[in-house]
Figure (spheres, rainbow, N blue to C red):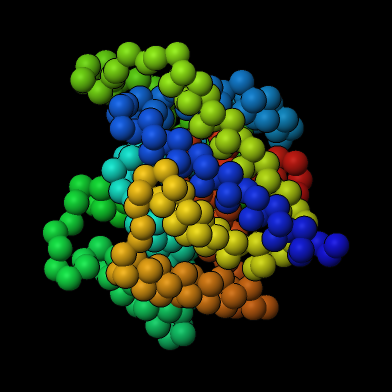
Length: 319
């Protein structure tokens, strides 16, 4: 079996696991606030992720080299995760994924001022096509937007900003610093919100507590599979596998929530996916770009309980 084939299989497994993770989030979201779900999923994810963070052998302290950029990335990451969990809880999974798939398009645009990227006509056309797809998903026949759609868009924007900031300062910051601050912020800020807004906390029944633990477990398993996928295969081959989540979303939505994507979601998702794949392949072309902001981004919105795969690979010397 070739390396790319192994990479594809690991990636498909990873995004299947992530989709199952999102089903559990959606199920728990019917009874618990997104603040509470993020808080407990991070809490259960701490033991194993702490072991991973301890593997960083690069000398230094936990003080960021770029504190203001680190603060901005942390705030964007916390906002993205909270909004993503809320979107999962109130939107059909296919709708949420379709909007999240716009993140590579936004990364490409944001990389122009922050990374000095040059985006030529071909990629601008792809961006416009993809954003038109987002518009189709968001506004079917003039229907009013819901809070869930807005939350999904905020998650996509914040996730894109966080990813570009990583590309900007990642080579100068310790991986453990890049990983630790967002996780701690997710845990502490969500805890503070639940104290300030008592209605955002609901006493947890025993079986549902297992659901929070399952979210963290699935997140860790998915992240480990993503790492294996990028170790085995070429990034340009592995990266588009994230779009397989739309298949899982359709299946899970029909089986567990009696939800099927409408024509607008199918059409819009098709345009977004096509434009995203085109941008990835353009970046994969030799000499296309020095930064490769999309191709080098291995993050996924809505998994606050685990480190990001790219940073863990870097600690292991594989990135």
